[in-house]
Image 1 (cartoon, helix red, strand yellow):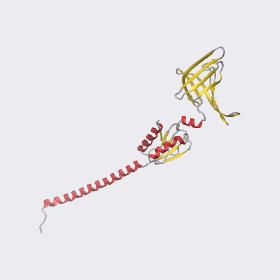
Image 2 (cartoon, rainbow, N blue to C red):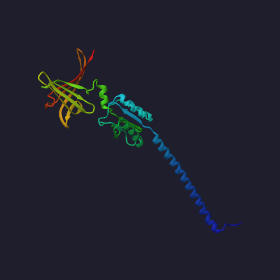
Image 3 (tube, rainbow, N blue to C red):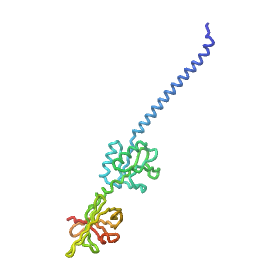
Image 4 (cartoon, one colour):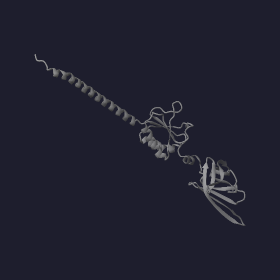
Length: 265
């Protein structure tokens, strides 16, 4: 019986150890591949997950919101509309989501879509659970819409018309006309047997809630309280606006202006 040479006996354990090491390495590589594939699959599934968009429309009208719903729907977002009141903390167009509930990619995409549509930046707000929060894969969109568009829809007559003075201290007549570019034109004068004088002034007007202020050369000259008229008369329904002066500094001779129309019965 032949026996292996002693030097070969030393090689055999090292060979077996080498094979074991190779097998172990192959197993590690295979495991790494499985983990990598699983991670990629998870990442892809997270990227393609479309969050539900809860669109709050209490401060806008359906006509304004319809194109926004269309835009989101075309991008495969499920839109859930409601007319619940906005939280007090929200005072401008805002996107709301809970931290970690929606991917940054989705927030960026939705924010970009809405900002491109409304032409202004959205505020980003993070609400904690229990106060006002959105669960996983849900976001809230609070949009105020276009205030001027709401005004035109809800008010029967725009105040961008020529107002005629119904009373003044001494001048014979006065007409005040507003323009959409923020400018106004004031025409005043007297017209009687002894004299006929007419003056024209121009400047900038600004409206804050129900107060209209007239500026000339960047200086506030006078202001008016804007009051809506909607009353029945013997001639029909009277609609329009009255401008009552807040102060008299001689700029318009303490005139009160009115623009009204009678809707025939």
